[in-house]
Image 1 (cartoon, rainbow over the protein chains, first blue to last red):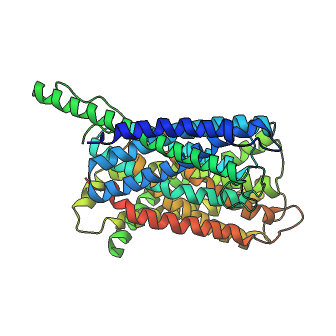
Image 2 (image 1 turned 45 degrees about the vertical axis):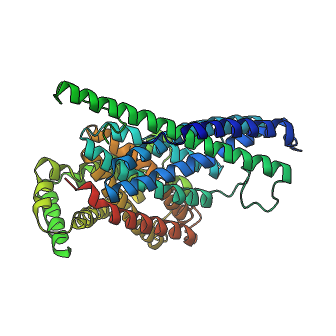
Image 3 (image 1 turned 120 degrees about the vertical axis):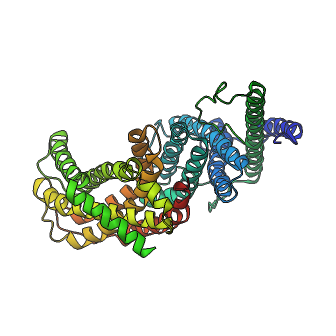
Amino acid sequence: MFGRGLRLLSILSVVLVTGAFALVFFYAPNDADQGFLQKIFYLHVPLAIVSLCGFVAGGVYAARFLRSGDRAHDLRSYVAIHMSLILAVATLVTGSIWARASWGHWWLWDEPTLVAFLIVFLLYACYQPLRFSIEDRDRQARYAAVFAVVAGAFVPINFLSVRFAQRATTHPRVLGQSDALPGPMLLTFLVSLLAMTVLYVTLCKYELTSKHASIRLAQLRRRLAGDDDLLALPRSAAPQEL
Amino acid sequence: MTRAAAAIVRKDLLVELRTGEAVPAMVLFSLSTFVIFHFALDRDSLSGELAAGVFWVTLLFASVLAIGRLFVPEREQGGFDGFLLAPVDRTAMFVAKAIVLLCFLVAVEIVAVPAFAILLLGPSPWGALPGLIATLVLVDLGVAVIGTLVGALGVQARARDLIVPILLLPLLIPVVIAAARATSPLLLEAGAGALPGRWLGVLALYDLTFGLVAYAIFDFLLED
């Protein structure tokens, strides 16, 4: 059901990620101020952008689940948020390394982008505890979807208010900056962003396929056993029915 | 819908008047928190950013108490079942509970604001009062909307007492930022400064966005 095009996507993401790293190391020039260190930018920024978009996508799928009641959308919403959380951890780690190397601190509180991202991360870190603490399957899916929609709307509001609060500009703005990146850097950045997006979609597809397979397996087992109580579903944060 | 909502509001306020569950606890919590801040910060009087921070943090933590309990009677005593059987719009429950929460918050603030001014605030509160009230209204609206939503999300969870605060606090961070920035110039030692209008704008935007989102989505939490 979810496995279509998986082979093509896997090959594409391997090629794109390899290509992006080749461009980063052999094509993009070293930054005048930060030298070699600035290369982490090509990993950190795409991670951040893709994970935020993934959170919002989780909200969109949740809204579609609420409208249609189709459990596949619930699964998609869950997987999108799950993968985005992993990328968000990677973003915080790479960002912290970069901040330590270039500003001398692991964390800066007067940085709107850092703080806003941390708040969004903290909020989404509650998604799985919420799912886990609701036992009834239908209710779990519905409540998680409501949470995902509210949190999806929260992402832009939060960035707006945190950015309003602090006007420090140590953290570089990538998009909409007046002195745009020079050509080779911009090209490398765009390829990295594309590679990260394709990688994210591929990973989501793999998780969807795997979850779908285990759900089907559990269904078949229950049918063989002929008794629902015999093989009761374990409590889980992940969707267990389709 | 108005009549159904009004009936629920009347019932909840009556229950609160007779049992006194939420508001007295919140008032006591706020007073103890002011005392704790006095000792923790080792200051006799606060002003400016510190005063605004202590005030808003105390109010928001106090609101967690009411939000955790908001839907519990409905669940335990079958209020949800009765409501779902009645031929009324589901949104009435959201509107009613948000109004009830708003009333609780206002009742707490009527005590907590003077107590804060007497116990901790250095500068005279009179100059800051109009701006403070304007901010309080916007903050209360935002907390009422988000609190009702989170309270309804949490009430069916097994670990309700854990889920409500960890969901609520990140969602309220923009409110804390805006409220603290808006009121810190009002509470300066040198006298009340101007109220920064753009923070009220952020609060109003927050209230509007989440008001609409919650209004659109609350029905799904009651469907059983």
